[in-house]
Length: 587
Image (cartoon, rainbow, N blue to C red; front, side, top):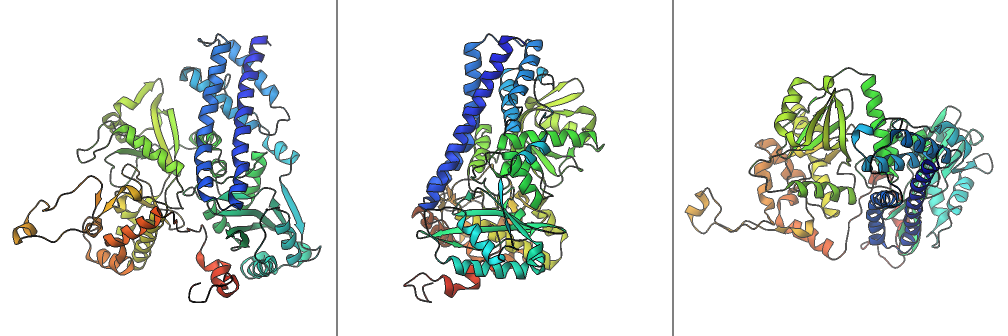
């Protein structure tokens, strides 16, 4: 092994260690922000943390280039570098993240022709089972040692917040009642049950989550306690006990948790035990390791291609004017590429589209905007691309596509969970289901408003329906902040000729929005229009939008809970949570 190879490997590894120390430091600071109810600081920390990775990778590249002469790829040398780097990962606690960092450095320094498993970690060398078995990241509480209430008291007391509980005994009683009523394991004898809880709270928005599982003789279920900070005191808001509730909390349509994960693989393994159907990539994404999520996703894609034989096809639904979308029917994702040319009615640039996708990644998505994985120079097997898709790619994105032997390389694309477009669901569903979907579409708009997001294009084709029948927005080329819009009521016509004119009789600026027009372009169906007016009439009133806009301007951000409001203890027992001095009318 050459000294140069060892030095190169050490330089890159040091770069990763520097990255992870910054990552952990900003995550640790969130605990203080939570205790101080500094919600803006938590949001800013989440934004800052996302950008840290690329900065540290660029720093490592600059260090390598300024210290060593590596302008050309010496294949034998870089095979030695990778081998030496592997030696640093023996008994290391974060080897999978270190592998991904190495890949990022190498891939940004050299051309794609050198991306093979001899020089980068296309296949991981990590023994995950051994890694998880070696380090324990959770505490265990046995119900046989005093009962459920005693375990709950020990759990809540194990997290040393510098603010006190409003009434810990009250919350223990409600959590115990909820567990026995809503969990199938709650009917078992205490001596058969154990509760495991991750050692670090998970922070997001205004909540801290104690992530646990209850383990019985025949399996396990989630046991998750959301803690809210109300005027400097804590209370338990509810207990989540089902896989669906945990899945919604860790949804791809929500922002990333801030949690002190010193051994990420062990944390992901714990999460996977209570959400076994979630891909590992999505679990890494949910705790803030976006680059690791990309790595895990790409390995899943390669493995899926090896074990399937269907072809990539144009995605069903109305074609987008900005994005060209395709999919692999047997793989639950869509691939989105920015078209080379936009339709005349789209007054937007390629740079603005990319900026808006990044804006969504940095924003609180409140469960209503799909997260994306952004890839560069991604190879697709030519023989797995259908003729129709190939023709569409050649017509829509010739500047972003190249051929390389048996592969088609797409230079830049986004990948999202595949959902059924809402317009297709509305066309194919019963009246009862249509009503439920329209109701959830309205709630989605209102929750996006609460997060200071105006979708721009409200057409049903820009929304998808998840497997849990939740409406999620996924077309970002026209989004903007609520505070950037001027919501107006259409002025009355001055003359009968005004009313009959094909052009508006009033001036319209670029940031003007007229909510009363929404119904006109949403649907031609009288039933859909009537239903929307019954369910959400305020969405078509400019005054309502201006009120929400004013609230945001005053710093008021409505709470959007990642679980059903009906299971909140404060809703089930409002009298118990009434702050001192408040009357029933004001509560």
